[in-house]
Image (cartoon, rainbow, N blue to C red; front, side):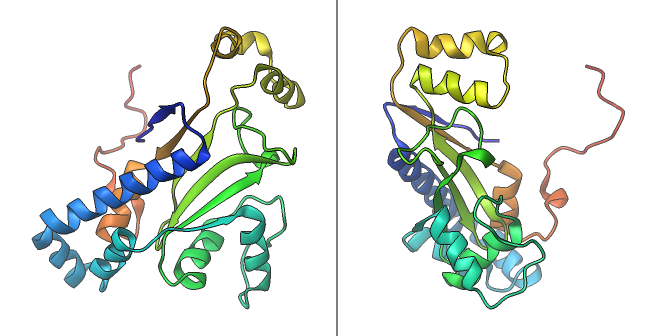
Length: 219
C-alpha cells in the first residue's frame, strides 16, 4: 500500500495529489515501458494502451456518492448487489460507473455516508457524510481511497463514542489533536491493484510480488 499523508490539506488537495500521482505513474509506464505494453496489448488485454492513455490524458470525473447512487438506480442493468443510499458500493457498481456511465474516464466519488467510513474521516456540515473520496478506474474499480482527517477533537471524540470505541485505547491519536493539529488529508493506493490495472491481468493474485505460503510466518 502506498499511503501519503498531507499536512495543511483538505479533500480537494487530497484529490489533486491522487490524480497527479496516478497520471504521473501511467504516463511514465507508457513512455518508458513501450515494449512491455505492446506485449500486454497483444497477449493479455487488447486495447490496454488506449485504456491507460485515457487515464493519463482525460480529466477525472467528480461526483458525490449521492449522485453516484442516483446514477446506478437509473441504470438499465441488473446488479448482483442492490443499490440503496447508505450501501457500500461494490466492484460491479464502481466498474459500471467508470467503464460504462463515463466511457472509460477515471471517476472520483466524494462525500460518502459516515456510517460506512472510518471514524477518523472529517464530518461534513450535513452531519450525514464525510469528506472521503475514492478514485475508480476501468477493470479494477476502486484504486485509491482517501479522506480529509477529522482534526476537531470534540467531533472526533463524539464519533468514537457513537461507534463504541474506547478512547483510552486511542489516547495517542487523540493527543495529536488535543495539543494542536492542522487540516490534513491522505489516501491509500493498493500497489497490487495498480500493477493489475497497468498490466491488464485478470486476477490480482498474479501480480503479487511475493509468494504467499500459508503457515510459514514465524513472527
